[in-house]
Length: 279
DNA sequence: ATAAACGCCTGACGGC
DNA sequence: TGCCGTCAGGCGTTTA
Image (tube, rainbow, N blue to C red; front, top):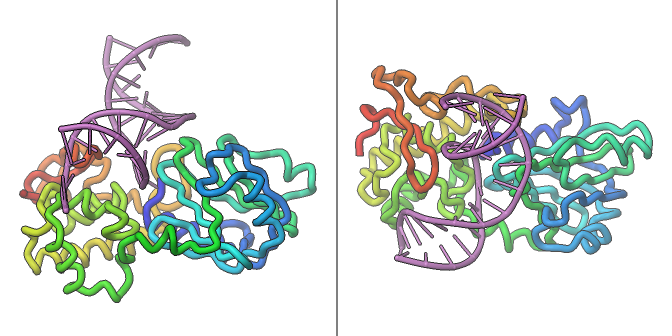
């Protein structure tokens, strides 16, 4: 489900309590765990997970690429929502209630001393959770954060030139750049007037600068609007109302009026304006 | 080095 | 209504 703006929104709301009726995970002590689907845990057994995480306090929640990063007293808890995941924090009434009233597709639940709980919900079971002493082993392979000012025009252009790959799969490669997914990549390429099959080392310096700018624009607008809500996995954002190409097959291009088409690039449904985005 | 094919899962939607 | 194919905000592994 989520790309960078959606994960960022989740991290912020878990931290601040906004949109969760004031509930925050920061400062909460973990006193219980329910693992409802064992394979949710990517690098540890349910038994080890329980014995290690119970008693730890959530110090902070942040994001790296599409990972949610929970900094705990001793370890780091990582969550990746993949295609259909979501995270809820909710108040519990009593012990009995905490054990019950789970939602369909809840795969992992953390119980806090306060009586509140955090649920990892994941209909398609693609999402994963890690408990790691050293999260760098997982996160360090990721490419740079697109919104990091350390990613300069020069650095980004150099990155494009050092590969000979189609632009869309390259931008979606998390080890190249962290956080871009199918939707925001389509939107950024459209705004930069680049065809998704364009080969990276044929991009000019000017095109590269515009692309980085538009990548940042769509991500920032997505974050401002709390992400995008699509299909049955609704999360409260409204960036879907700003889509220029994604999901707009057969509708007119907002720039030139040509009908948006859907093509396949790197096995992924891809939306372009065939007039504005030439190879 | 690059990219395709496929697997992992459940659910929504459209056509018949 | 039921059945069927297609599609889905992701990513790892295997194969070419």
